[in-house]
Length: 138
Image (cartoon, rainbow, N blue to C red; front, side, top):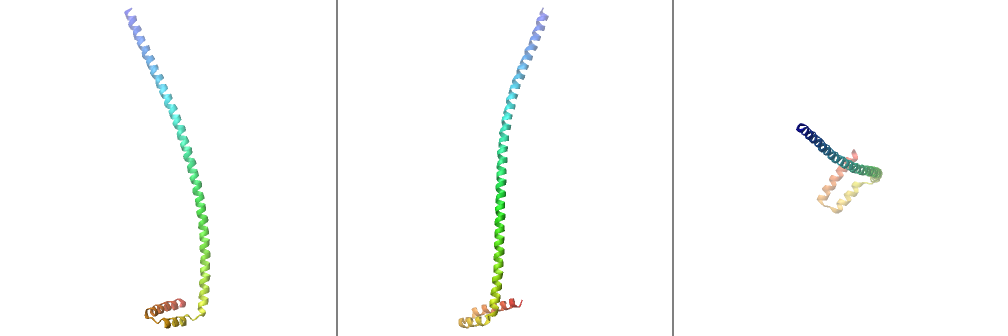
């Protein structure tokens, strides 16, 4: 009888151990399920953040494209304005060269220098005239 009682006690202890193990496993399953739920919530939060970031990036891309288009338009306008101004300046330069080629500038400058009659100014004007005459020869 003692043998059976010992055997029964041993079996009872094994059953209790198994129950505790099952209880621990059930608790672990509950904790794991809570962790899975938390991870799902975190995944949804991260997906929301990712969606918001993608939307913001798309908005910035659109704004950058619009800014780039505006800059290209402004660049084209400036280039056309510069080209028109350059053309006008060439025409003006041509006009004044033709207009002053008829006038004898040397006589006018000599008359002005005679009136002013200052040595530094005469030297300066002589240099200007010399450089102007070399420019005409070219």
